Length: 371
Image 1 (cartoon, rainbow, N blue to C red):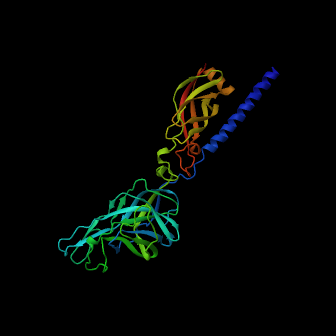
Image 2: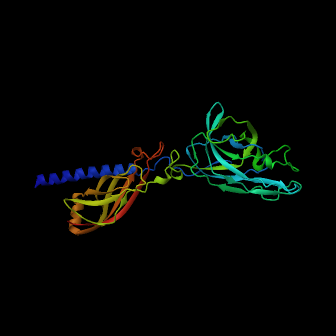
Image 3: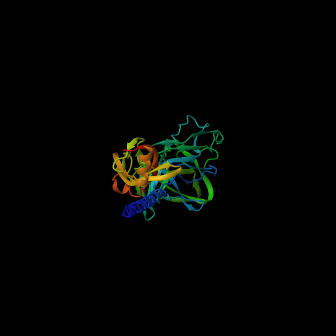
């Protein structure tokens, strides 16, 4: 009998060692993933008044070089999911005969510094339009010059260190001078800037010279001027996977567990798990089975798992001697199955550099019957 007791004790010690290891792995898998940031609000905070007008005959663009002394560059990789702009465009004064309506079209662009003070236009959004503000005969705006409007580009990726600009189409045909306007302004009158002592705006203009892949240095650095444009930069799960570090289409949902009834066979139960095709690489981690027996929570068994993306798999779990005995005595036990899992972007060609490992715990209940 003594050798039998020793073998039983040895098996229990081995089981406790295995379970302790599983708990340790599960604790590591449950740690939050780095880099899963939310949406960042960058650029102008839009608190200053829109009290400065810019107008140019050729295509023109501006970006905030500094805002209240801080850099206007993007602090990290992400996707420009929205811009908010304060102000609008001033219409021709009503004193002008047969005024031609201006086109308040603009685009949002991503500029990448290439050295020597020069930048390259990397991407350009679709066309947007700011509100048009009626101007009275004396040059006084009649509409709301301080309204804030939101515009949402699509797949506009930015890298750390890039700038986001406001690009308007110019237009000599919309040139006018009216009482109170800056003399010599040529083109559409955009009142989306603010006079402020601690900000600076870079400016460039060239006829048909601001398209994608064009390279140039800014024409001027306007001190004491702020472009009233705020950029919403999505990162991680708030950024498309077209952009570096983004994985909106591949948010990890964890191992899919089936609520089922299983029977013990040779001390094991066979559970079933699935891994979404959106998952990078595979669903990997640790699965544990627990049940309340005699008023106490008992770990019946556990095992590592690995299920490929877009696949389902049978996951055999060895029960402990105590767990198998409990199921045999009760004939049927309701247990909780939990899976502490993570994805595997390192082994998926869809994942771009910088995509972090994501973690998630899923759970279900199963009925375990004695074999």
